Structures are given as structure tokens and as C-alpha cells.
Image 1: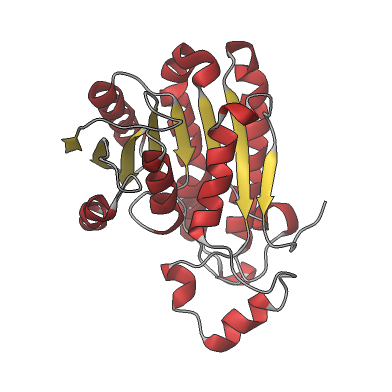
Image 2: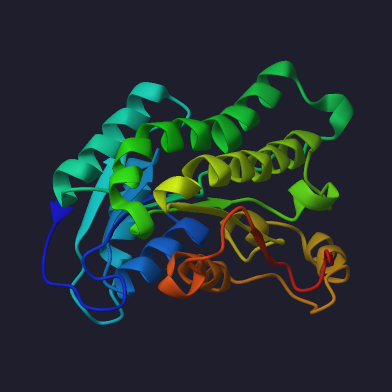
Length: 259
């Protein structure tokens, strides 16, 4: 499904693909990119949620050019189809945002092999597959090319409540980003991570008041990060102002992890 109309803004003429875009941080990122004029492909495994996201998607009051792709980004065939759809709909691909992820809270001793594999597949393997499939298109974009991987403070400090598999997957994502930053630097393509702390999403909304309070108490700024604040960090790294930043991890964690 694609809709097309004129767009305006700092990202006008550029095209983006965002995974896990049906809700939460992914939808906030897609909305922010669209609001700045980019054509955006929203990718998610949840078809119904994608349709709702499409209705909610706005370009800050301006028309939006968007495409919806239902895909399991841990599956190579689905990833190739998603990338091809975006390239066909928009004529190319300049920006890839790997946001899709899951966050089980299983204690380490209770993590099954299947759960471990599923978390690593969605949180880390999917980013590898998307980057690999998008590589030739991003290289053609040259200095307009951007990869942003949504990592987590958990990948830097082991997390708070999250499982070891989640923390390991996000640490792996940071390592993957550094490797790709070196690989793609000669092409002018930058690769960076954004590492938020606990966010205000559907996931955390169902936590008990006690659990939420316990996590907030560990964050110096005393609250969860808003999806729009993560999106703002992504937009900065995509902007021309960040053209000389690559291989970096931008912390959006309220002071929870200080380097």
C-alpha cells in the first residue's frame, strides 16, 4: 500500500525505511522523518497495527508519502521484499532505521534456547539482514546514506529489568554498527546507534506502578524517555549537521549511563 503527495522540509527528496514502525519508538521515528519531508516505508509484522499507524501518520500537518510493508524482519526473504518495495515505491533508499525489537524480562536461568534465538533473531539478525539487503541502495545514495540502529542502554550496562538475551542483542547491535561504519565510510554512508533508556511505550504501560517507580528511581532525570525524544536523536544523526559522525552511539538515557 502506498500513498503519494508533495512533501517539504529538510529531508525532502530522501527516502527511508523504518522497521518495527507500527507503534512506539518506530512510529515516532517514521512520523518525525515524514514531518521533515522524507518518503517513509513503515515495516512491521503486525498488519493491523500498521494500518492504524498509517491513519495516525502525519507530516506535521503536511501530506505524507508513505508505504506499508508487512514483514518479519528476522526472515531474509521478507527483508528483501521490504527493501525492494521501498525502492520500487520511492525510486531508491537513502535512510535505514533498524528499530524492530522485543524485550522479554525472563531471568537468566529461565531463558530457553528458543527464546534466546528469537530475541537475537529479531533484535540483531534482523538488522544484519536489513543492512545487507539495503547496502547497494545506500551506497548509491553516497553522502545522503544513513543507517541508524536503535540500541539500548541495556547493551552498554546490562540493563535494569531486561533479560540477558536483550542486553546481548543490543550490545551486538552496537558492535555491528561500528563495523559497518568502517565498511561504508569510503562511500560517504554513515552508521550510528541511538541508545535510549526505558521508554514510555505500550510495553512499559502495563508494568505495575511499583515496577515503574523502581526503574524511574534509577534514572537521574526521574522519568522514562519519550518516543519523540528518541526520534529527535535519530533525526539529528540523519541530518547534514551530523555528516561527520559515524560509528557513534548517541545516548538518550536521562543520565542513567554516563561515559
